[in-house]
Image 1 (cartoon, rainbow, N blue to C red):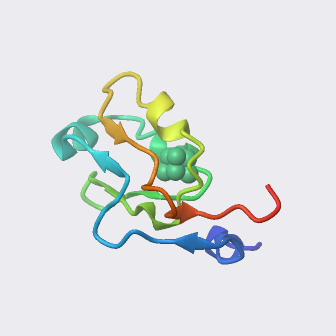
Image 2 (cartoon, helix red, strand yellow):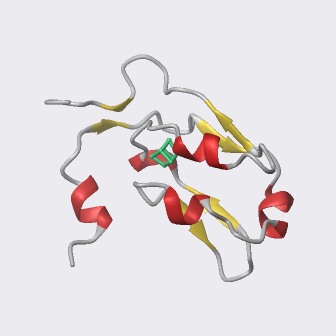
Length: 94
Ligand code: SF4
């Protein structure tokens, strides 16, 4: 099966180094969250479950779909912004 990383490799991004456009507000809340639905539903696999029940977020492959912000309804623990102009995913034929 083709891995999501391989697919994402086909997208073009301009990563805003050191300025992620999405942030987890309180990591403690993620540790306590039972379903961690963001780790399942993000189409780009930006959220990963750690071995210690923590959630890690790497936004480099983000498709800016907005799903994660919407699904974190219970805790509203995601601070979501679009990347600055000129950064993020550059849709070629979208
Ligand atoms: S906006 Fe979409 S692609 Fe980006 S991190 Fe959230 S769910 Fe993943």
